[in-house]
Every structure is written in structure tokens, then in C-alpha cells.
Length: 97
Image (cartoon, rainbow, N blue to C red; front, top):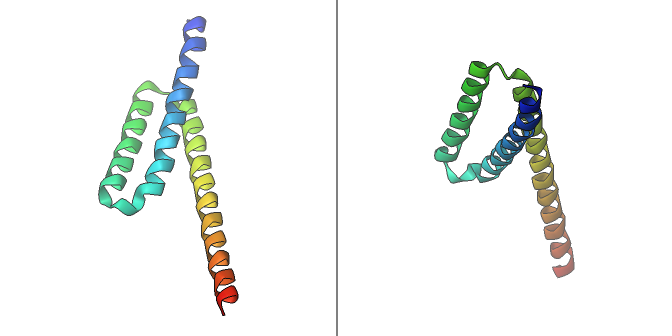
């Protein structure tokens, strides 16, 4: 059983890393409409139901942590892109005038 858990845990972690990537991608693509948000909510519900049925709360906490960290990372990158774009626009206005 211990060997099974040693093999099983990395696959669970890889699955949740993939899930956090999907969450970050859904956050980026949220401007496409309600379908993406519906898919995102569906994925959250599937993970919650699967976690609740198998009592894998530690994996859920890890997945939530990775998902939240990826969300914060995407928000920071998008915010820096917006700041850089606005600074670039102001510099172009100063150079043109």
C-alpha cells in the first residue's frame, strides 16, 4: 500500500498542476464569454465532488494552493503588461508632441 501511495501521489500532483494551468488559462480567456466561466465552475465542482468522495483533502488543499498561486501569477503578469502598455502609450504621446 505504501508503494502504491508513493506512485499515486505524483500523478495526483501532476493532475492538479494541470488543473491549475487550466484555471489560469480560463482566467486569461474569461473575456470570451460565459462558456469559459461555466467550464471553470464545472471543473471546480468535479474536483470538489471527487475530493469529497475519496477524502483527499490534502490533495485538494495543494491543488487550491497551486491554482491560487497561478491565478496570482497571471494577474501580476497581466497587470505588468497593462502598466507597460500605458507607459509606452504615454511615452509615444510625449515623443509625438
